Structures are given as C-alpha cells and as structure tokens.
Amino acid sequence: MNERVLVSGASIAGLTLAHFLARSGFRPTVVERAPAVRPGGNGVDVRGRALDVVGRIGIRPAVEAAAADVRGLRFVDDHDRTTARFDLRTPDSVEVMRGDLVALLHARADVEFLFDDTVTALRQDPGGVDVEFARAAPRRFDLVVGADGLHSAVRRLAFGPEQRYLRFKGHYFAFADADAALGEDRCVTLHNSPGKVAGLYRSGTHEQAKAYFMFRSAPLDLDHRDTDRQRLLLREAFGGDTSWRVPELLEGALADPEFYFDALSQVALPDWSAGRVVLVGDAAWCASPASGAGAELALVGADRLAGALAAHRGDHRAAFSRYLAEHRSTVRRRQRIGPNVRLMVPRTAAGARARDALAGLRGRPGPAGRPGRGESGA
Image (cartoon, rainbow, N blue to C red; front, side, top):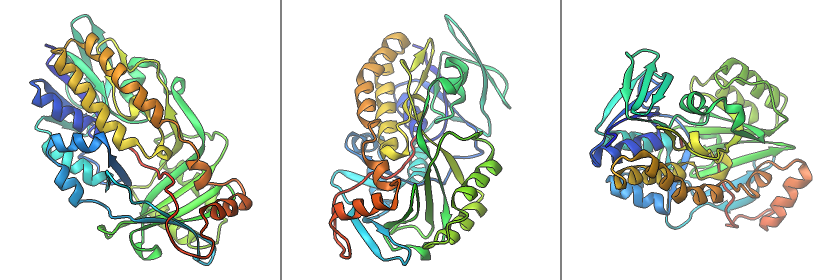
C-alpha cells in the first residue's frame, strides 16, 4: 500500500497532509528543518473549501476563535492622514496568523516528527526511496513528499535546481515584528513612496504587530539563506526614506531575529511528481504572497493529495495523476495575481493618487473594495 511516507516540512501543507494520511492508515513521518514548528508568520486567509478542510480536521472552531479580526486596510500620507480605505471583511473567510494555524494543525497530527533535520539525498528504485538526512540515520520510505516551501530541498533533489522553476515577479518583500503602537487597531496601514510600500499589520487579538515592506526591483544577487545580505538590501531600499513611520519600522525589522526577506516569486512546474516523490504547497505551485491564496492552496492541495492516495490504496502513479488533475485548475486561477501588486506598490506618486481617487475616498473614510494582501502557505 506504500504506507511509509516521508513528509518534508511541518507547515500548513505538510501538517495537513500528515494528519489525513495517518487517518487513512498510512504511516507518515514529518521532517522539519526548524527545532520546532515555527510560531511566526503573517496573516493568512482560510476560505471556501479550505474552511471545510479545517472542519474535517476538527479545528474549525479553534481557527475561528483565533481569527486576527483585521477589518480594514488604509493608505496614508506622510502625516498619517488616510488617503484611501478598503474593507477587508469578507464572508466565508477567516484570517488567522500563520503561526496560530500551524500550532493547531500540529496538535492534530499524531505522527512521528524529526525536528532540527532536513533531507540531504534521495535515491529512488522501483520499490521505494532511500533518504539521507543531515542528522538522522538513513531510512527507506515508500513515498517522499516535499512540503518544504518556495526553496524546497526535496524539489531540488528530485526535479533539479530551483532556477528552472521559480518565476520572479519584479518585487522583493520583507516582514518582521513591529511596535503595535505605530498602527491603527484592527487594520493594515500602508504608506507608499514611488515603487515602494511600507506598512504595519495590527491584529485585534494579538499584542505583537507586523511590519511589511515591498519594493520594485530588477533581479538582485540574493541567497535566501543569507540574512545579513537581506538586511543590507532592505536598508538600501528604505534607509533613505524618512517619511511617515518608515524609519521606526525599518529599524525594528532589521533588529528582529525572525526577520524574513525574499523575492516575490511563483513556482511553475509541468508536473508535481517524479517517480515516488511528489510536491505539495509552495514547493509545487507557490502563487506568491501577492496572491493572498497560500494557506487556501496548501490546505486544499494537501487534502486532495491525501484523498487521492487513500482512494487508490497507495498506488502512487494513479494517485499523483488524480491529484494533479484535481488541483491544477485551482492553482492556475490563484496564480493570476491581477491588479494587487499595482495597487499596493504603484510605480509613481501619480499612480498612488490615481488609486486613491479610484477608491473614492480622498479625505473621507469608508469601505471600497478589497485588494489582496500577502500571505504564505508552504
């Protein structure tokens, strides 16, 4: 039945998959590079079919209780005056902090975990996959799942270098912890300068706020593991900006040990499986944080993969084919970012004024639509 399944990555996709596999009689093992499930991250939307998935896991009431209760988004000028405001509340959707969702999923995953470790080598044969780890002794599995994010080690080992599959979308972004006093309660507050946006996300149910940055750029020389270089790039992009509260947000972000920086990218693969190895979540199809669909795709995709394996009694060829057929169209829809980035990061000051005028809110508060906001899945 191909019962022994290694899942690389203990975030939304990997934990969801492990839970459903175990419930269907498989024996999953989850390996995670971090020493424990990662508590940080930004707000993510659980909506539509993803709400059904968390319901079947048994955590929907807890997810709804943990809702971030962020109600609006406002753009501000240098003096913190609102120039445009958008209502972010939508039916059939719950926004929750990524770390809160991961903690709830981890509590439901009654499986073996290997923390503080990662996959370093894969060797397939007709009967299984021999796996080597950075710390643990080598082991053999029937199937291996890469749920290890945008810079997936499993994808690199089974499919080749990530440069073949990552599609850069002309921007870089960062987020980190921030002083909640700098922003409006239950609101995302954003400030534009040409080609840049800096802002603050303030949940109604968390004391800790989040700082956000995004800027337009040609491709930069960047290693996703080199945090010193990442901090330097962010300082170069925003260090000369003394408007609004950018200096305070920047200094706080650069001092945060959980600081996160990356290119705005999507993953494009012709197939999500290679023999006995398959990908799920951002490793397979990252839609980019600008899509606002990372958690939804991770939850629904993991559910579909687990369901396909259970329906075909572990026949990986048939299951992987069904999984691709069922989920591909959903991914393609969500990878259409549309106007979100142009709304969030206008190229010019005139572009920002045009957006504000389009909102119909120059000088007065009130709802006017809902641009997407960034999130990550894995």
